[in-house]
Length: 79
Image (cartoon, rainbow, N blue to C red; front, top):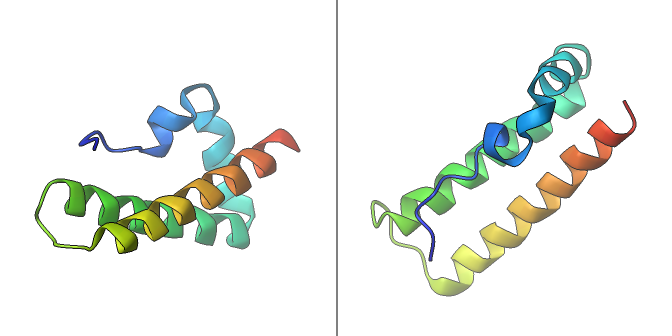
């Protein structure tokens, strides 16, 4: 178990400017970023034992975060 937040800045350190630019012009991308942050926060709160989730629920969230990260990476690759 990791207690390190997987912020977008950590996941895409060389693409922060591209993320901000795409977010500003694409409402769908902005929504994906918001969902990523929400899911990531839920995982972090569970890992930190602030909130209690079952292992299964945490795994579902981890898979969702990975899917969102892949979507973000794909959008950035087309820039």
